[in-house]
Length: 577
Image (cartoon, rainbow, N blue to C red; front, side):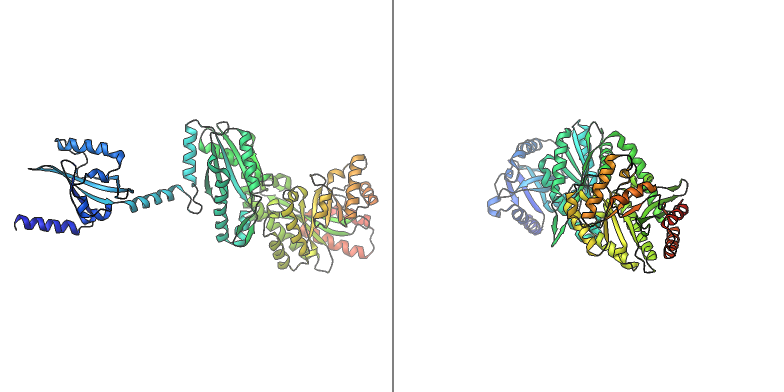
């Protein structure tokens, strides 16, 4: 094979290759470029020959290229010879893109030459960027994931930067998931991931740490007043519902705030402090923010331990409902029972609510126990009323239950499952829980009353409800707190408050139940004031379900035999001690 034929075959070979090939002479001018090169860079074959190779090199890199080529031409060994290198290049239209270039050099009688094989690696870079993004960002929301957010936070703190860290949990998200399904739940998280960055702008970085928990870091902001202002703005923004596919979803937010360096010098410590503060915000009823305080740490750890123990107690059947009778004061006839939770602890014995309820508030365990309590109360009410009597059972709702969007459905399910007339069930809520979100509470209460279930305000008078606001709520019962009953005979103010509450309740057509009645004298004063019903140790202490059923049946039989109310009360008190 002669030389011209070899050259012809080499030319045909390079023309058929998909890899871009180029040959540059010692002056840096392009002497050969195959079709793949022309196609890649956007040049015609006849316009590229003789052009300086710098036309494909970004301007910022041309100086280094010229020096390097001159050194190699002068005899220096090429440092990158035969090794693929990733650099940037420029197309004919000025577009910059990434390439992988493998360089070779040689000398002939005509001088120094350099050749290069070039690949477009734009797709690889995009793929690598996507993988990097997947590694550092949450796939659902596009926000920083936990690892990336914590790494960024750690970098800021290691530089000595003051930061305000917000840990935010969504109030009511679990209920949305349970009611509408995970598709709607995921869409809601995506909507939240749009709203938060819009609110904070470029003042902060935002991440999703997992589930419905988000984190916000305000760098160069260690001012509690500014943090307070930002938190209030976020809570206010969450008062507006999220509209998704025809659904208007109510969602609140609770925020725990920790400020570096006073609440933590490293990322993990600062996050833990914010988490303690978040727990306290949710325990306060949610839809609130709290700053970290050192005392929260030990209190929160103890509560979490109790909460874990309670979850186990629910599974193992250690929880039990006790029932305290409610009577008509004029006849002492039993008109209902209040269901009160107890914990049969394996080592500490029977525990009253004050020992463990504070650990339950605003936790997922509270919701589980709340639904169990509702079901048990309906079971008891069905047994009490199986003979045709009308005896209500009142059960307290946790704040988290009350704000659940599926509360009405859960009540309907429980009532239907036990074949119970809705009027035999009464749900008790505190005025504080109800009035935290006036409009949403009104809708919830209307939904409950629409199915015939009674609604009671518990411990009324100890919160901050205005008397006029009660006219808006569809209540059936007003329960006067025992704090006003204890000294009703000796305290003029307690007597005046109780008298006003009774009069107001009667004017509104509500049943009035006075709690904490322990003496006949207290009962007489209340009866004279016009109070309908009473509850307290005078009429019976809380008792297990079977004892309450037996006592109620005995009382009904004896009532038909005209046994005196005083004797009935004495027997009730004796049984429940």
